[in-house]
Length: 394
Image 1 (cartoon, rainbow, N blue to C red):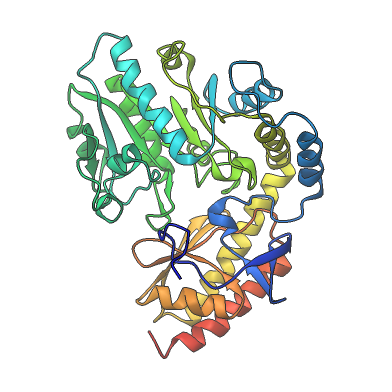
Image 2: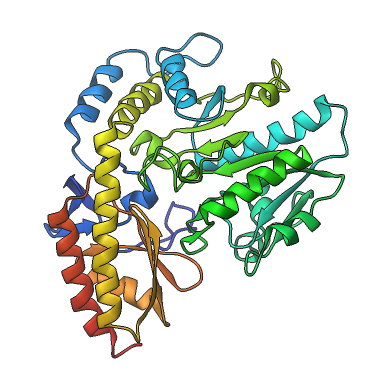
């Protein structure tokens, strides 16, 4: 029988019916430690009482109104986001790809508004992932995601990060360069992190060249590394910030933040969306933000991240022929595996730990931010057992 679903996903034969904290329960009754969080989405884990109460309350009101009218909660969440960032205005959407597309449109529209219509080129980086739309895959430059979709959107200069210095980067900037766009930590690219020093140099370079500095915090933002936005560790102030995933705690929500002088280029009718910022999303988004932005919460994320990373480093020492490197910060971690890392993901899953493969032989560990140390310890024990089993395949 042909499935009525478009066959674009290679799904595991697993279905989950309930969960608590960072633990999921399958239909068969088995419990799994979730170290993927729906791809960095379920930031508050499962069965968060305040979040459930908020959604039930919102569900008793109109679910959808459209942006033809004022929507309850939009101004409140926008104010929280702008007060916690370097930006002044927010556009709400439904996903990371939409947030990225909004950012690209703002960059192009701004160039036109300042009478520099030819200044449309955007510098991006190898191994980046910005979403699945034509604009997003054109920006990222990944052959894996671009295959079969030509012609792609022009206007991107995708450069290699290996051995990249600020002097080399500056040489790529021309009179047609409008912006530099990057993920402070590349998720799909293999938990590859720009240093705080390099982020500062890039921000300074953008200011010097009078071009836009934009960051994609869809995966590394919203408390995942211990601050609301990861770039804040470097003390930089981007002109545009794209966010999604963890901002909705599992409810479809994305946002593009922008400084007012750049956002002024977006006039009535220049952009929009039917569902973006609907009442349900705003109710959930406000509750998620209130919980994540709490200083004690963020401190715990940092502490648990360090604890987890130390435990993984101990595993690396125990299994040096399999684990080449432990990467990342906070609860955005990665294991670079010597080879056959997809098989190791399978063994982890068989032993009841859910992880997510990334590019470049890296396994992502991006659990709910509420994961407990007890759950971390269980995950490490499962990893240890799995690595012993994996020796036959490595």
